[in-house]
Amino acid sequence: MSKNFDVVVIGGGPGGYIAAIRAAQLGFSTACIDEWKNEKGGPAPGGTCTNVGCIPSKALLQSSEHYEHAGHAFKDHGIDVKGLSLNLPQMLGRKNTVVKQNNDGILYLFKKNKVTFFHGRGSFVKGDANGYEIKVAGATEESVTAKHIIVATGSNARALPGAPFDEELILSNTGALAITEVPKKLGVIGAGVIGLEMGSVWRRLGAEVTVLEALPTFLGAVDEQIAKEAHKLLVKQGLAINLGVKIGEIKAGKKDVTVEYADDKGNAQKAVFDKLIISIGRTPNTNGLNAEGVGLKLDERGFIAVDGDCKTNLPNVWAVGDVVRGPMLAHKAEEEGVAVAERIAGQHGHVNFNTIPWVIYTSPEISWVGKTEQQLKAEGIAYKAGTFPFLANGRARALGDTSGMVKFLADAKTDEILGVHIVGPMASELISEAVVAMEFRASAEDIARICHAHPSLSEATKEAALAVDKRALNF
Ligand code: FAD
Ligand code: NAI
Image (tube, rainbow, N blue to C red):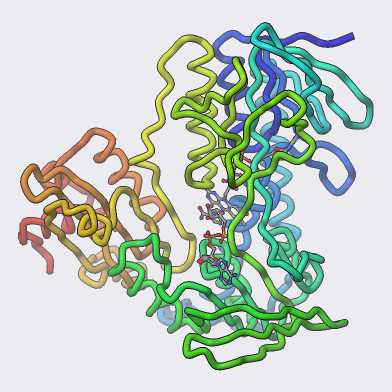
């Protein structure tokens, strides 16, 4: 016997579980199906983000930053730490506890909102505009039906041809978050978000980290001035970043991995690593969904094809998050999940793609929203730019973290904020002010006229806004 619901969500990551909660809040009988298993085989909702992404990576970034600070940054503050040592099992254990707290939190939220949870793999059996049948293959097999289906099946790490992930020597994000002994030499292919975050974690814990990046420019999507500053700071910390390389053969031995590559001058190079992280992007996950069986259309890159409202080609079937076009970010997936639930309820769910913030959690952090200076130039938009360095910010000095800057880009005529870019302490938190401002289509002058608490890092944001009209007060 099938269990019938108004809405069934396939996938319990940030896109799926948030869509399910919002649908339930709107009064729909809702189920969420997720197949992720914890080490005991039990449910572990939260998807990539909670289990092997955002949450565990930020837990390790925090722990490794504490370790690095205790090693030398504390000294400046007059705190001498003697007998410092690393307890990696404890650090990894803490990370696992943080993950479990999040898994349990989602199960609690499902109960609270009366979302029925199914642990297993969901796949389409049949259906049309009147409703769909979904098979759930878990410890037992069940059948559920619903008028509306939201697909939120996420993404998987992309492997390099000839170098499949074994999670022992050749690691995806999953293995990179669970290395049980600090590698002496760690190789990272891809200087993107994962490469820089995971490279930072293991460098701080003592690994010699070499990053190999195909593109000749560092962080091409980031504002050039900010990327240049970030590159300088990360190299100074000891990350060896090699740009413009062409990866050749990758051979896993018994205890190490050999990577052959051509450097940016075309010279043949060979490097031997104790572990190799491959972080060259992610691919949409439609495995086992039986998309073809019901005629659910994918695009040429394997993403579920959707329109601007996350509607697929099938009536009443929606898709959100990493499995559809757009940035692969947890908060983008969540926004789409909420918007779809609201559209099912006949409301006007909204996602503003122009104001989705990005954060790279290196130290210092890098964050941005809106257009980069190079994009504005390419689009022929006349703009004004203002920057303010943290070196001139009192709170940053008190913190002992004065690297980086805030940069504002505003329309030359109207002064509307077009982009804000930050490299520096707490950039992940500071960017929210810019997102709010841009969502309300504020001008740089609006921010410049708002009273910011002193001493605070956010004063650098106000000063950068003032700098747009060359009126910075403290620099
Ligand atoms: P996912 O989180 O991938 O969830 C999909 C879920 O669906 C999974 O649980 C999967 O098991 C399940 N599933 C798939 N197919 C089926 C099926 N047929 N039946 C049942 N269940 C199924 N983003 C940020 O915004 N901030 C960060 O700091 C950040 N850090 C990251 C760090 C790393 C190392 C990685 C890898 C990613 C990070 N991301 C971050 C990206 C973020 O994790 C993703 O954008 C986000 O998880 C996408 O959410 P989703 O719901 O679309 O998919
Ligand atoms: P990425 O797209 O951020 O970076 C991949 C990098 O690998 C690029 O610089 C690319 O030029 C390079 N590359 C591609 N092929 C290569 C090759 N053959 N040889 C060498 N270099 C190559 O992808 P990444 O780091 O795997 O992360 C995937 C996604 O996960 C991110 O784009 C982001 O959406 C999400 N994520 C978000 C985080 C955050 O918000 N803080 C943290 C981690 C991941």
